[in-house]
Image (cartoon, rainbow, N blue to C red; front, side):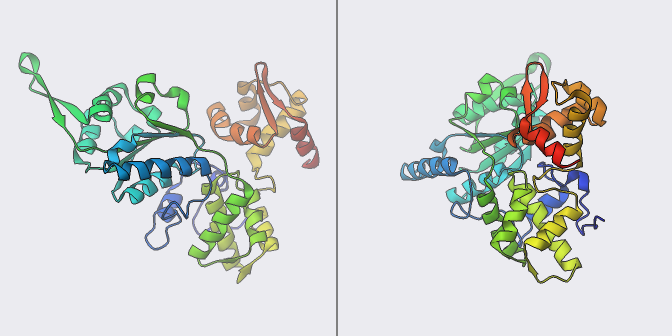
Length: 345
């Protein structure tokens, strides 16, 4: 029987990399912050960190922080894009201001942000591919020349004023690089893909955050959690909190492998990091279509899940794990996927 988490996270959201309200409240909680505090504490994304350190060092030597240029991060959610924005500001000795593109609907929204930025501030815009056209075009002169255009008056008496603003650094984050227009993409100097994490990297993150949460957890136990975390730090942190809840509920002081297995099994998260819907997608393809090829709409119909959710959330990890292939004729199970289904019937 599954136990209830004190954080009230539903089993359907446990393995989703998008942040929940609980995630955000704990990730940013003062004194209990699960985010790394400097580049030395940041685990993973080694090539990106190496590149940023070089560019930051050079910008500091020139005594011109803005010469670092703007940064575009793309890749699946939950891999640390927001944390990098905070760390970048910390390394520069400035402030990070965090926003989501869908919230920047009106011109005055983005203009207010740009006018309030101090020299060297990091402006982070998540889901930047969702900026509307007017907001995006207002960014162009700001990104290139640190100027903004403000209109005044109406009708024939209207005029456009160009104002100077402080030099800021934009960090854009997206899960869909192909949805970003070429004019916007060309204004970024640094464009980096965020990579999935290895089990060893996740285990390091889990052990470090276990200490922050006051949980005694050894390396073998951390590897159990890492193996079920879908190669994503945010999910690893979420599962770590659930293991902590289970340990406290069961009066367990030191968490070992057996405790982690028992805890995560109670939430129906298997050793491959798959949940009920993952298993339903794979088993339905095998049972009804002999493993494929199967169209996305057909998979959505037989599983009862929205096709966009399947494509954006479930498929990437199933493909990354080697269970599923996306072909021109449709989705197909791999030999590994067929073997998995056979062993879980």
